[in-house]
Length: 225
Image (cartoon, rainbow, N blue to C red; front, side, top):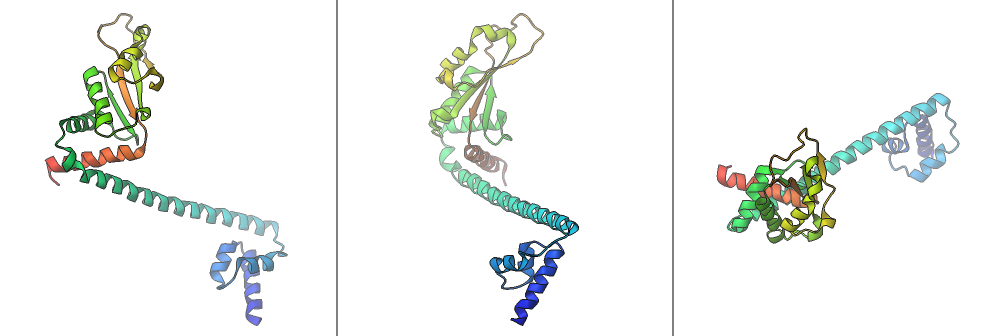
């Protein structure tokens, strides 16, 4: 009993100093939250003590969030690395396929690899055909995940280039994102065959990481590591 009374006195003293429940329980061993709550229920704090306690609670909470965020980031990095490593291990069986190799090299050269998802932009209809075929046949990307966006100068807006690219890619117009019209000082078309740049989009970070893993492995295969 004497020991518990000493613990209670110590707990009240720590609370007045601005310590949180968690900090008090870490200092006083074998102290349940319910017991501590009962001890401190009638403890009156001055305005200054309340402000100090609130400040300490915010500090402890912020520190916990930072630690949780750091842990989550480390877990994500580990998971991402596992995805890339596993993808790289698949390269020997895939590299024999010409379509796979052509598509991967095209993406390596011209694809966006910093956005966290797949993006590939080009104005050549034949290259766009290859990349869409690559997504469908090599990776079996579901049709609803493949989206198209057109970038084109405003003077071409009346030509309905969306229909042209829909025919080229065999992707319906309802899976086209909003066309981006770029300003230009020119009033007359210089290239009559130009139909704009097409950006192919595929959401999902796992696919993006898989491609990164394959590219890393391909680079090591040819350049040495």
